[in-house]
Image (cartoon, rainbow, N blue to C red; front, side, top):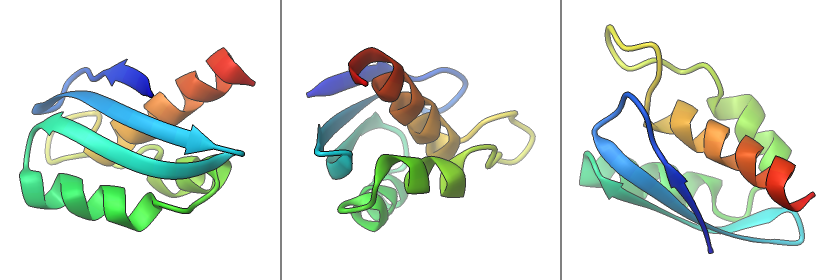
Amino acid sequence: MFIFKTKGVCSTEIRLDVEANKIKSVEFIGGCAGNALGIGSLVTGMEIDQAINKLKGIKCGYKDTSCPDQLAKALEEFNHSYN
């Protein structure tokens, strides 16, 4: 389990389970439950780089980031830490 502390969003952390470069599960702690569950469901089974490419740079309203963008950052950090 990889734990990423988020910045600039309502959720406080993201917990990732990755195996063989594929996302097995994503859990957002805090934030909008429905959106977090939806994002996690959509990326489950996806390759890390594909998810990063789809989510990186998405903004939430006036913020410079969002939960999807933070997930992309978490996946990038995971890649740097474990690959």
